Image (cartoon, rainbow over all chains, first blue to last red; front, side, top):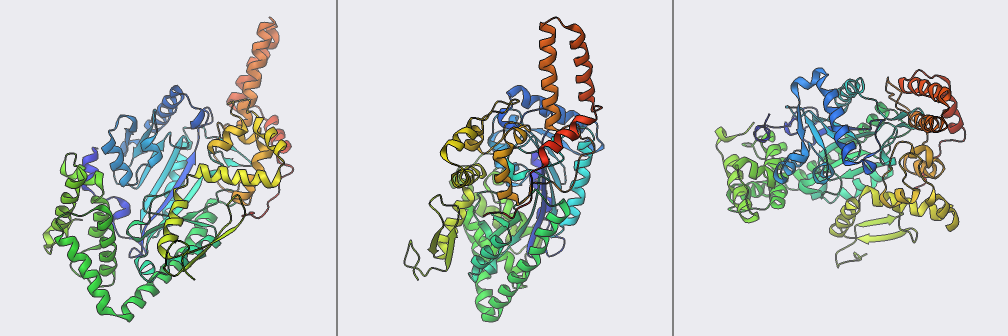
Length: 356
Length: 190
C-alpha cells in the first residue's frame, strides 16, 4: 500500500454514511496501552523505542490481522507524508513531530490505525462513519484482544491500564464523536452548547483534535474521565449527549429556514459560487464555505453536490493532500491556486466529476 | 454588557476556575470567547495538568510538604515527583505506586474515582508491583553472588523465573491489599 493510493480513496470517516450522518461526521474510539517490560516514553532510551516497535511489529506479524495491514515506519517518512497522515487523522501531531523510532499500523480501509511510541507505547484507534459508537467499540475490543494475546500490557487491578498521563489511566479509553454544527454557529447558540457540555464533563475539540481551531464548524466531543466507569458506560455517556446536540442543531437549521428560506438559500448558493469560481483560495476560507455548502446540501437547498464529495473536499483541500494529489511540493501561493482548481474540478456542475 | 476586549455585546460569561488566583469571571463577545476557548484547547494537557497539580498542592499542602513530595524518587525509572509535575508525564508504570499518596488527590480530581472498572487483560503478569519485585530479587541475587553465597543466589534465581512466568501466587494480592485500603470515591473537586 502506497500513501498515494490512500490519497485517492475516501477514508471510512469521510464516507458520509451511517446513522445521523448529516450532522455526525464520524464516531471514533481510542485506547492507550503500554508494554509492561518498558518504561513510559519519556524514560525510553532510543534502544527502548526500537525494542518496543520491534516487539509490536513481531506481535502483529503473528496475528491474522497483519495480512491486511501496513506497518509504516514514521521515522523514515518525510514532512509531507507525515502531515498527510495527520490530515487523514491516521496519526497524531505528537507522533508526527516526535523523535526516535515510531510507527503506525494502517488498515487499508482506514477503519483503524495503531500508533506505536506516541504518548503511550500503543495508541489504538477505530473510526466509523456516522453515529455508531457501539460498533466502533466492538471492533476496538476485538483489536485490543488480538494484540493483548501477544503482548503484556501494563495493568494493575486497582488503577487498570497504566498510562503515561494520569488523565488516561483506567480504561485508557477516549470515545469521541465529530459533529458538524453550522446552524448552531450561525445562530450564535454554540456558546450554550459549550456551557451545557462543560456541565456534563464532556470535552470539546476541533476537527484535528487537541488544540485545533473549530474550522468548518466541526466539533469533537469526548469523555473527560477514563477511570471508575467501564468502557460501555463511558461510551453511553458520550452517546447520550449526542442526540441532544443533533436536536439543537436541527432546531437551529429549522429556525434558519423558517426565518428566511430565501436568505439561507442565497447564503449557501453564494458559498458554492465562490468555491466554484475562485482563482485562489486559502484552506480556512475553503473550510468556511464548504461548511455552508454541506448544510445547504443537507437541507435540500443545493441539489447537484453530494455529501461524500463535500466531506472528501474538506480533507483533500488540506495542504499536504493537495501536494500529494498533484504529485509535487507547492508554495503557499501555488497551493491556493491549486486548491481553487481542485474545487472547481469537483464542484462544477458536471456529474461525471463527482468523486466517490 | 460589553465584551471586555471590544465594543461588541458580551454574549459569553465564562467563570474560570483554574486560575491560580482563584475563580474569575470573563465577559466576552462570541469572537473573543472563541479565541479564549480555543486557546484553552491549545494549552497542552501536560501544562493543564501541572497547573491543576500546582493548584491542588497549594491548597492541600504547605510549601514544605510540597518540597518533600517533589523529592520522592521512583526506584525503577528514577524520575522525581517534581519531574512529573514539570512535564505532566510519568516515567514508568511503577510511578503510580511510588507516588501513590501524591497522585491520589489528582486522580480523584480528574476522574472522581480511584478504582478501575471495566476490561482487564487476560494476561495479568504486567503489573508494576511484579516489575518491582523482579528488580528487588535481581538486586538480592547480585548481592548474594558478590558474597559468594551461591545457594541463596540459586534460590533467588528460581524465584525470579517463577515471578517472571507469573506462577508466584500469593504476594501480588497481598501487595494490592496493602495499597488499596484507604481509597474511596469522591466526586470531582473541579
